[in-house]
Amino acid sequence: MINSVSKKNRIPSRTAITLLAVLLLASYGRESSSKVLSQASQDYFPTGEWRTSSPAEQGIDRSMLKPLVKRIRKNRIDGIDSLLIVRNGYLVTEEYFHGWGPNDLHTLQSDSKSVTSLLVGIAVQQGKLNIDQTVLSFFPEYRKIRNVDERKSEMRLRDLLTMRTGLDWSEDPYQGSPLFQLNNCGCDWLKFVLDWPMREQPGTRFEYNSGGVILLAGVIRNATGIATDAFAQRYLFDPLGISQARWAYGQPDNLPHTGGGLNLRPRDMAKLGYLMLRDGRWGNEQIVSADWVRHSTSHSVLNPRTFASRPVDYGYLWWLLSLNGQGGSHDRSEDIYTAAGAQGQWIFVIPKYDMVVVSTGNTPYFDHAVDFLYSDILPAVSE
Image (tube, rainbow, N blue to C red; front, side, top):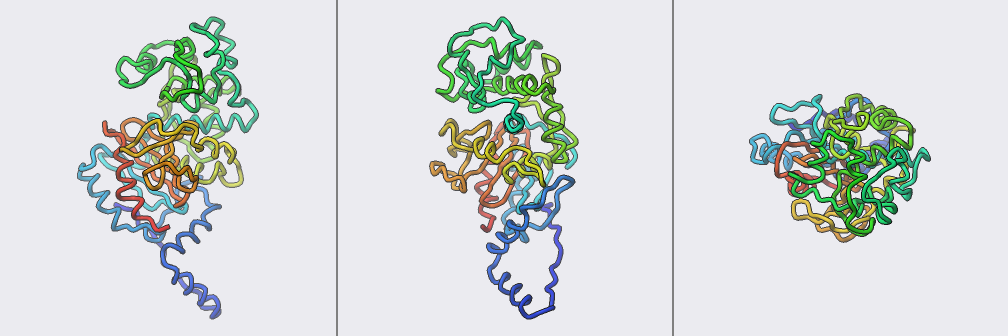
């Protein structure tokens, strides 16, 4: 059911001034009260569990969400496993379908890439690396790398983050693709990607490349001296109170699959979205710099794809939808920071509405959630 936990407000009767203030606040309606609640939520962080509220108390029309949940539950929207909505720091909707529950770890697929962006940002903040360093400089252990030319030598971390590696790499269709080969080779993943031939100058053209994100796992490990999964747990997951994280591993040395191998609870996916919503701050700690959040959600690549026929831009391993679904404005207040994964894994961060939406699934129609975000969820929100 839609979460509707609420507390009745009591109006204090100490003075006429207090009463007048309450009445004036009520007169502004849902829109103004939502803004006040949003401002009051800036210092709340769900390190333990989420606080809850009814949708209405946070300026969301519950009657517009109920038909959506009903359609998912009756499988009229195929293969959705969970739907969570956070507004003003309150979990207002938490729904699970098809046998899934709140404590089940769910595959993130390529949402893992957006988590990897956060890890790179933390390493940058620690002074361990900068994104204009060349990729090959982080891997001195590989003395013989194939297909090295001037282009490969000039590839930078920035190119991995923006999917402009210059490698001759395509993941569509997946079957037989370089990613398919990597996932099934039982070999050294880092060497596999480092050896891959180039097609063009790095930084010139977008080509979706999970292998480049797996290279970032090796970069983090070599730059920090800490295994990448341990680095993630120590500097990202532990501060946020995320105690259950499971990775898929490969070679060398149980390297975590940062391109698509992370599993988390949907509630913890929402925490990652909330960290982005709060510009990298968690409590009194700046987990990742506000500058990194800003850069990683800047429009580095324009219109490389569409989701549910809506244009989308790309930052540092984060996609960027627009509130109007049309794109083009590049007004940060109108952006939706988006982590997107195969089979329907989504984290939507909506700063203008102080809101995070998470949906997980097991569906070939991976962008169902984009459709119902625009058709059902956003129209239910009062600014």
